[in-house]
Image (tube, helix red, strand yellow):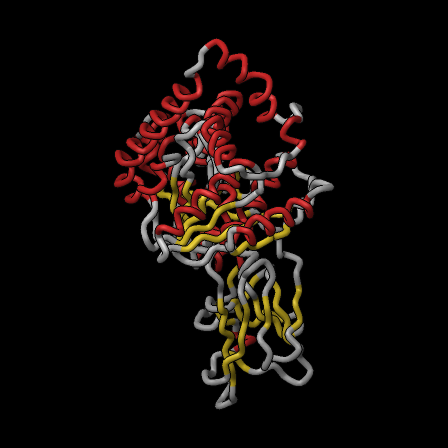
Length: 452
């Protein structure tokens, strides 16, 4: 039977979701699962089609997918994503990222996302990795399975050739979409698929299978290194996710690079290139001059150093000059850049209430000297942040309470004498309801995490 190995990957209660483009590969996969589900009635199968809106026939393709699913009595969700072609990574990469974001965000807990990548795709991906000069991690190519939170991504056709998929489609008289852009050899993958691989296969018929075996060996090597380094890496990672780097100074460069890659990957970020790893090592770890705040930007994140630890941070626009009025303290105030919201709590007298001629605002910058409650003398704000162990990049992301132009409090950190309660006056406190760091959410990093 075709694709019989797929049966061993699923169980009687599998909640299966097929990424359904309407092309021959995903059509064959969806049809196989449609038949499979009939023999496993406690399981479920549904399809998700992503409409990128990039082609004149995009809506026609979406309608085709709906009709196929209607014919097979399967539920089909059509998701439209907006693609802006203003990235240095190109339209292919942006579309792929948006597609996976939409797919993962649409999954319910415990659902399995199945994609129709096959043996030929594996070979093409490895050749593209060779073109980029990738190491064993990149040459591992497409992973057959991976966990994303409570969901699993599965590539059940990865052991099967494009030819076997075409034979299945002919046997069952399936219809599918033909995307003309697949013949455009200006795209790297199409160039390899249409112009390079046919010549190689004519010379070496088993080339695709042997390349797949090489990618498997690279993947196994990476998994072995993971096992060997996991305990050491766990001992270096702090509760806040930062990496204690002093022990790295006693290790070889090769081992340091391996640990750095895994620390970054564990936080769901795009793995740095070899040159970027060298920069992190020499510019941030080795260069430990006082008053230096080195930073390396990689894609959407950056690496910084603070007090013997490395931090991986999302790149955000500075809030230094932001000023947000809070006219009605009875209404929660939403902070920018997913910093959460502020609520007024009148059950505790922490701050004095603003006077009638004072307006309340939230700012993210203070300069000069301030007299903090509990201290005898004024202190420079820079020294205050240092004593509170606040990294430089977080000092412009902490909401500061101002009455007019007077600093009253840094939420959860300190109160100035200008904000203290006098006598038996009534007061209030500010509750900061923070959201979890965006890199802990599967939706924030799925496009960086998945290998294609």
